[in-house]
Every structure is written in C-alpha cells, then in structure tokens.
Image 1 (cartoon, rainbow, N blue to C red):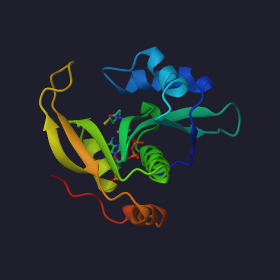
Image 2 (cartoon, helix red, strand yellow):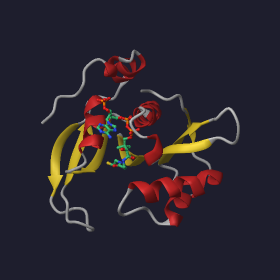
Image 3 (tube, protein in one colour):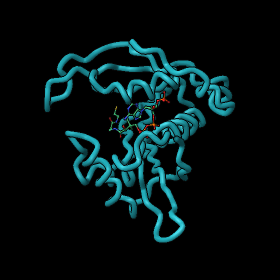
Image 4 (cartoon, rainbow, N blue to C red):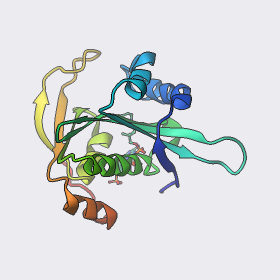
Length: 176
Ligand SMILES: CC(C)(COP(=O)(O)OP(=O)(O)OC[C@H]1O[C@@H](n2cnc3c(N)ncnc32)[C@H](O)[C@@H]1OP(=O)(O)O)[C@@H](O)C(=O)NCCC(=O)NCCS
C-alpha cells in the first residue's frame, strides 16, 4: 500500500514531532539539540519531512530524512518513519526526494551505514541501487552490532531519469 504524503523541508516548528519519531525509531536517538543544529547551523545538511494532511485537523509529520552533503557524496545520516505509518512506502518517497535534492546539488554517490540485522532498511536501499561495500565491526555501541556500509554510485542525470520514470519500482531487490 502507498499512502499519499507531502515531502517538504523540515522546519524548526516540526522538531517536537521529529524528535518523537526519532525516539520511537532508534535505540540511540539523536540528542534533542542535534536536529536544531542541523537546521540552524549546518549548511551542508538537507532535511525533509513526510507529512500527511487529514481531512480534519492539523497536518502530521510521519517521516524524516537527513542528508549530509560532503563534496560529491550524499551521506544519508538518518531516515525514519513513525511506527504507526510504516510499510506504506513513505520511506521510499523520502529517499527519492532526498536523492533528487542531493543530485541537484551535485552529489555523484550516496552512502550510509545500516545495522547488519536491519533487513527492512537494507531492502529499501537495495531498491535504489545501493550495494554493500564494507562493514564496520561492532560499530553500534548499544549492542555491538556491525554496520554495513552501503553505496549507490553514478547518481547523475541517468539516475534521475531512472527515478523519474519510476523504474526503481520494477524489480524487488534480490535477497542475500
Ligand atoms: C526503515 C524504515 C525507514 C522503512 O520505512 P517504511 O516507510 O516502512 O518503508 P517503505 O514502506 O517505504 O518500504 C520500504 C521497503 O521495506 C519493506 N518493508 C517495510 N516495512 C516492512 C516490514 N514490516 N516487513 C517487511 N518489509 C517491510 C517494504 O516492503 C519495501 O520494500 P519493497 O518495496 O521491496 O516491498 C522504517 O522501518 C523505520 O523507520 N525503521 C526504524 C529506523 C531505521 O531503521 N532507519 C534506517 C536506519 S539505516
């Protein structure tokens, strides 16, 4: 199922909802000040939220993504969807917007670290052509889990066209 969301830049007024999603999604959430720093102080940080607008009531932030632009690399620093709204393709929509935005700013590769046991996130990334290129042993301090380093290369105009044409939908990623 795909739920319709609006993807828009994160604002300071979103922070309470953003932190609530972060805390419900990660065993080591970012400190409260981190998102504020990213929004106010880090010119190389791109932050978006996914928002749904119910027929009645206020819009609700249901997902977040943070990307750091480091030279020609887009580093996906964080992506999370509120537990009540998962498996509705919200993370896919966030990732597409983030990759588009990063490519428009000159990124040629995208990288990230993901917990070795986090199959759901790895499946998401593989759909967008990320491949495992390395492993950081015992990277996560809370449970000593390894991190996989995943990279998508060749993010130029052809990749943008591949995104725009929806070709990423075509094949489910292979398990391994
Ligand atoms: C990883 C996460 C962001 C995915 O968000 P989401 O909106 O549920 O993901 P999507 O609905 O866009 O689905 C992405 C893929 O994961 C699969 N997926 C999502 N939830 C799933 C579930 N509960 N079980 C199995 N597969 C699932 C989808 O089927 C989809 O794959 P497909 O297109 O090949 O079918 C979300 O689970 C989350 O916030 N997890 C906690 C934070 C986290 O682990 N972040 C990643 C850090 S590296």
